[in-house]
Image 1 (cartoon, rainbow, N blue to C red):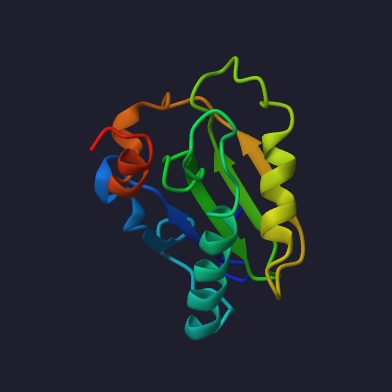
Image 2: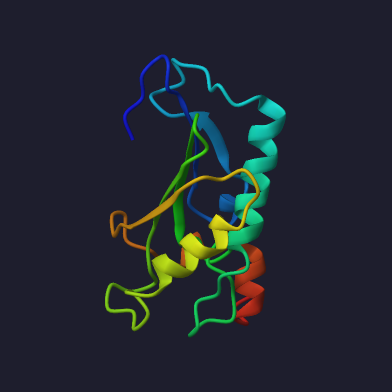
Length: 142
């Protein structure tokens, strides 16, 4: 997503490990521009997007994709378009062709969001260390 001083994008990038759910919220482009979206609305949009992501489950694992650590980045541009980078637990996942659509549909229900685009990425590869404690409990690892 290109970032100019007149078109900043808020970005949520996930960190690795169990504290991954504590998302890093920053401005795309290194924080040099300011989002045109008021901070309070940006916080609400981010919270609502994360809540929507938590309604999407990997059909082979009893945990949602957010807590599994499959969401790598969420960008919200000034027009309230959302770009999400996500991965899969394995590149050969049987629902690889369907899951991005599930994510687009879920996030598309968030009030105020215009367009949602989801990109599958495999770098860095997903590992179980990306799972939150909640997901580890759900799969019986904790």
